[in-house]
Length: 181
Image 1 (cartoon, one colour):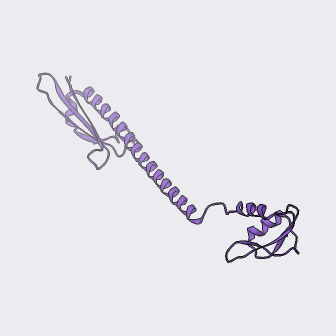
Image 2 (cartoon, helix red, strand yellow):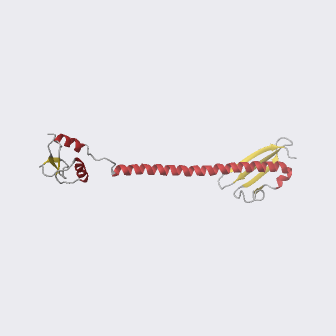
Image 3 (cartoon, rainbow, N blue to C red):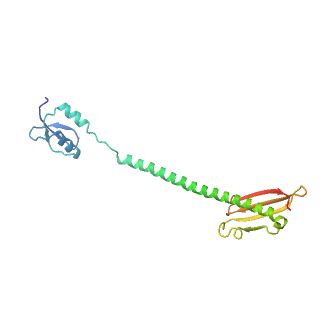
């Protein structure tokens, strides 16, 4: 039945195909167009056997993504993006904290060196900020120091701390045992 032309009709209610008559002729590409738009009109395809019709119709199953699949994919993507933004925010906070801790540690070492150079006169001033030493550079940093004699004769215990926030973990402290001249 290779050269035979057939007329087929798609019923919209059930979606199945049936052979009707032989009066309207269309090509195979037109069949695919009509199938895609879901028409219920009858048409004829020259040279189409019933076996090849079944194989062409079965290969025309709908492809693509359903709305539910797209929504699930978008939800997963949204969760991933929110998580990444949260990690980025945490990374920025930790970087700022590390920068302040490094700055505080360097300022503690500077104050410890200044205390050693000033000698016993350094005991007069026990706290302050860095506005006089570094004008405008470290407005949120404050320092304090304690100088007292150590247990060994001739040594002094110098304790210097720098704080930069309201929390108790926002501080750096160093203690040095040294002779003061």
